[in-house]
Amino acid sequence: MKKTGSVMFVGAGPGDPKLLTIKGKEAIKRADVVVYDRLANPLLLAHAKPDVRLIYVGKEADRHSLPQEEINRLLVREAQQGSLVVRLKGGDPSIFGRVGEEAEVCRQAGIPFEIVPGITSGVAAPLYAGIPLTHREYNSAVAFLTGHQCEQNAGRELDWAALAAMETLVIYMGVKNLPHIRERLLAHGKPADTPVAMVRWGTLSVQQTLVGPLSTIDRQAAEAKFHAPAIIVIGEVVRLRDTLEWYETKPLFGLTVAAAAGDPEQEDRLLAELESLGADVLPVAVEARAAEADANAERLTDELLACRWLVFADERQVDFFFRTLRERRIDLRRIKARIAARGERTAQALESRGLPAERLFAADEPLAAVSQNLPLDQGDRGLCLSGGPSGIAASADGVVWRTASAGRLSWVDTHPAAPLLRARRFDWLAADDPYHLEALAQFAGEEWQNQPLLCVGEETAARARSMGWRQAVSCERGAACVVRAVRSTNKEEAYELEL
Image (cartoon, rainbow, N blue to C red; front, side, top):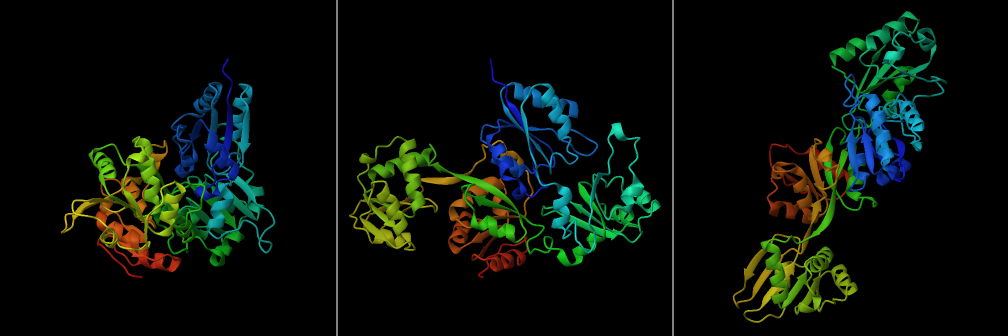
């Protein structure tokens, strides 16, 4: 008899993927099936394992991709098949998220379940707009309410007199009914000059904030074409935005940057810096892949067996080299070449794998100089493994040098979340490692050469130029240089900045 699975209801947070809880992330990583809706950031799905099944159920205003009753049946059906199902719900699942209904259905069907709280947008969105919901000079109470009544409650009016007396109101799903909300509050004594803030897509780079008095806020919203999803805050605490606004003033706020990312468990310096500057960062996951089984790979194998000197330009090529040997089943003992390394770390990587280098060059030694300083006779062949473009050079004495790569870093496009991430709009690509550029080009698609690219470090910029990137901006590491590089450009031209 097949074992029954379980359901975990996980709060996805307000939008910023870093606001997911640790427990929520662990649940996604374990899930066999993830059932998600529109307000769950697709970046969260990248935490899931490669064989996860992703099921989109919509939940947009006035239009659900899947009716609630069918969502309930879906959760039960998937769990009964033995799967760990994560129901990923925007914000906190218990705040107007219908988790009670879905959990009740699981209980009735005998499905074990767990609820993982999330950061609700009613708290996070105002904070990202510079509005703390409590302040002892302004209030001592907050009320959370929905501006959209479900069918069962359609005829049941809220206690507007009690709500008008509350110091601070936080309203979910209230944009459509804002004229009615305004009219009811004013009719029950709420002062017309009470400040109101509307925060749309809070915690993301597309966040928009509209502030005005209660008497005119509905007209302001209509004129600004202010649409859902948005949180509405009504109360004197809104005045704190004038002094506490912090997110929308960051230098890269409003920009989305797709940046290459290595190990997801390790903090990436470039991604962290871009995020601290206010950019919405799309991590482009990369992985190592050996030389592909094509004509170039076949030639590489022939060169490995025929060359007299084998030069490793960096430690990553050492990793690629041994990966290629394994995948192409080449016995290391068949390679008779003498070994040279560029840089101490490259030499150490070779030594650790039992292949010591006879010659060691400085890490910044040009490859042309390396080849000229190795003893070779007429007709000998040399092979340099580097991350640069492949090529063949012949010297006057008949020595032939070939430059090739033993492998590359590629975008992990096989993950189920990859199409969702690729569909996201971005303003910039960014890399601080020349090996990441091919993966970024793959992610960017056919027009990659025309996409604005931020290159941190001259080595990365040089590699971008050699690839033919038309809009590459180079800068050194550091927040000031990154901001200057991004702000100093016009996307219609090609740039090279020396900062």
